Image 1: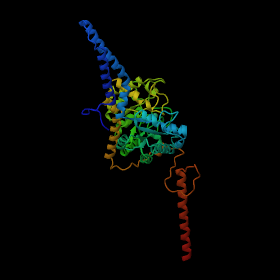
Image 2: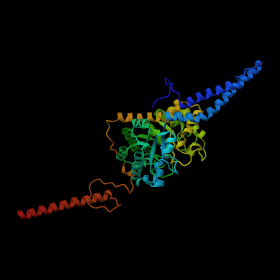
Image 3: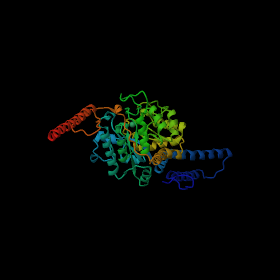
Image 4: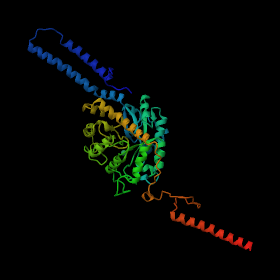
Length: 474
Ligand SMILES: [Zn+2]
């Protein structure tokens, strides 16, 4: 993709329009004041002032109308990579994942479809494959697989989409005018505390995972206290939690800290070898919601070369139902003032969150946000970073860490069974001959006693055989 900048003399469509407008006004202005007459120097000064005023007011009128066009122009060159979208969840709720019965070009009742993604210049979308916390320790893995299947189908059955699994593929998809789909797991409960399951998800195309949703996992802590599960007093990231981060680093999967507690986020930032993201979180200093990120954590994120992708949900923007675009821009301005523009992105959270600011109701409205930031003197260069270049840098750096770790073998660490005990987890250590009734697990004591019976029976048979031999010989 070409960059607008030094050495490039081509004018953007907006700039071309402006030149035409100015020439047009100058022509009118000259016609209006061309009649020669004898006037006093004082009158001449008045006339000159009036001429300047007329040109400036007409220009500013046009300028006001074209500011949004300038945002569109910039987004044409630097289309958005959006960090978070829950369309897949809505398709499960509203349509039971039956893609054959809907048309993704135009969907009602949701904030995302292909037409609106295109109108909003969204070139890449991280699609969350999310399953409710209620599925933890039950069928979370199956449900996650079904959501991955859904996103993979969406992104292969529609020619406008393309499933991508690397930064290079993402960049290539922009050249092909496609909307890149990046699959992202939302909530570590999806892996059921199993590193082999994490690896299999990677093979299916998953390239990012948030460590928690609104529930703790046995190894990481959530920012929410909604579910009273896996409460710990010792640490916010257990030994196994660190192994999950290590394995994600080794695979080249982006660690997402949105929804984790600040303590867990801090522990991950201390431990990870690769940059991390907050895929859909805003600034705690602007709106003190626990889902947002405080300044002290932003400083750690900057040191990590990571990224905060600002969430647009009204509750996280204004800490109430009603919000307006300028309040969203306040988050951008604040984060910029704390850590600069190299660590900022956009993670809309459309179709996950329910209430959005006026003028930002769906994925087609992103240009309005860029327009607002332009009016606040964000440069094209800074906005290009926010729109896509920062995310691409993080993705590439995560891949570079993966390449550095390529000689490491997959981790065989298993979570201690006492940390994940529940009736759905079968713990078989060696083959067991008896048929276990459906839905019933076998306790280790049962297995031990059965093994003892088998050994005792073999021993008795040997003794009988020996006695028989003695009798035959005698
Ligand atoms: Zn979320």
